[in-house]
Length: 46
Image (cartoon, rainbow, N blue to C red; front, side):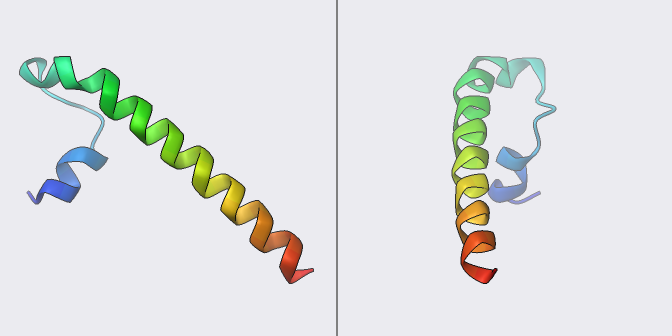
C-alpha cells in the first residue's frame, strides 16, 4: 500500500483513529475545492 492510498482510505485502524479527524477535515476541504473547480470549468465550457 502506498502512502497516497493510505490517506485516501477512510477506514483506518483504531491506532490511526487520532489522525482520522484531521485527515477527514482535509479530505472534506479538498472535496469542496474540487467541487468549486469543477463548477467553474462547467460554466466555462457552456
